[in-house]
Amino acid sequence: MRRSVSGPGRRGVLALAGSAGAAAALALVTAPAPARPPASAPLARASVRPRQAAHAPAPVSAPHKGATTLTEVAVPSGDGPFKRLVTGPGWRRVVRTELAEAGHGRAAKAVPLAALVQFTDLHLVDVQHPLRYEYLRAQTASAWRPQEALPVAGAVSLVERVNALTGGPATGSPLSCVVTTGDNTDNNSHAELDWFVEVMSGGRITPDTGEPRLYEGVQDSGLPDYWQPDSDLRDRDKNAAGFPRMDGFLRAAVRRVTSPGLNMPWYATVGNHDALPGGCFAAADTRGFFADFATGDRKLMDLPKEQAARLWRAVDKGLDPKGELFKEMLRSERRRMRVVTPDPRRAPVTPREYVRTLARPHAKGHGPAGHGYTEANAEDGTLYYTFRISTQVMGYSLDTTRRDGHYKGRLGAAQLRWLKRKLAEHDDMYAIVFSHHTSTTTPEGGQELLELLRETPHAVAWVNGHSHRNRITPHETFWEISTASHIDFPQLARTVELVDNKNGTLSLFTTLIESAAPHRTDFTDLSQTGLASLYRELAFNAPGTRRGLEGAEGDRNTELLLRKP
Image (tube, rainbow, N blue to C red; front, top):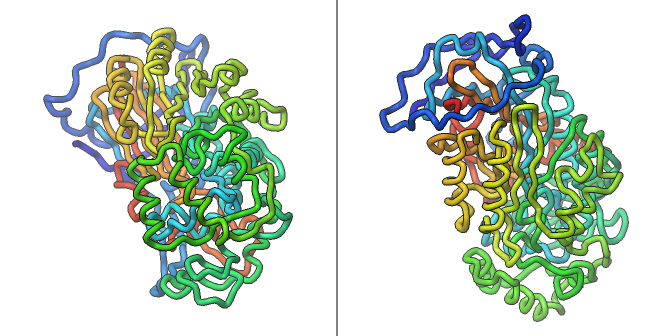
């Protein structure tokens, strides 16, 4: 694997050069070209000519120089167990040449083709939802996180950051859209879906269900297994991880938040947590045990260790796809449950309801209506579609969820046939495919999708999430770009910019972005912005959280070279 690292002092970013009578050109101060790719690198792909724009691309500004991870990132500070975050140096851009060499002077004639933003794994979670399984915390850190009461404030701050971008961080080219790659919500809930829509399109969100303005979740349970922010109780997180007492935290967490909404179109892709109760059990109907329990008045908050371990083992290994063991456990533990306020908004969402919620007038924002989905998707239950990113680039949003239950992905034969047909219909445009699951987390159909994209000359990227980790993988003729979540630290989104170098190569520029919230926090600041900062700092300090989710240098801010078809 060859990677050439360029820092701010060695290499500039794309800048406007201008060219009379032609598409707007960009100038780039390039580093010396790396050595030629190894002999095993693929030969040029079959000749396909994506069509030229009927007119010159819109003029581009200078590369955006605002706050991205190129300039600064949050880093820990202090000697105590609870680390405070401060502003640290940014991550430099890495030039990756596994699929094509980086030719000298390639930027002098380079033309931007598309620029977009990827959100993934927002996990807008109703922390009071009865079907949540926080009591599995000892088995998996993803069962409960101390920061989970604040994802709406964090997501709004991410929207604010994107709105402040004047263009792509590498090219300055106008950003055409935001594309989510699944797990927008956490528990297949109507309330969570409404919050997601209002965050993205704008509105006032009260991240609270049950009794208004009253928190009824594990963080006011008095149980030492969870951080009790408003209590003097020496809980596990205060004792072992130095978590603070914060008077008024839970009242602030369920207070109204205001989102300006994105100032550009956005498109949605479905993930397992959007489609399945708990993100892993067979899709629920509007009637039945899961629907009744979700909207009911009981919530389980603790479970004996051996029983919890047995339940998690079944979930982790996919032994309980329909949730029968889970249902049996909940029935048997009813007497030990806490009484909570019932709420019909916690009901599960069917595919039809999912599509029609996105198509409501209040969901439109800057559009498009349905955010990629159409009434045909609602009628036949297919949650995949195509959309135009720019005059030369098409997007393909897939559904990799398993409706029969499991957190891993699946791509069925019918969807693969559909994708093959659509790719052929648009073979005069570059293709970027979006899904929730990655190639390594889609045991059924993942390899078939890889092969299809290798055989598609105009396919340039597969963009996904699910793993909560940044990873960029070369696949002979295209790049797989996997991006970290916005619930686990370091809470990132990513911009993707496609450029034609006019020398037989293309470049995909990827740049990671944090939310607009300040890195430094103040435990007494419970404003909307203060909560967004706390969201990030609590995520860093969450006990059991995985480290290294930011990935290696070559998985973060990059220029990814590939050969033109």
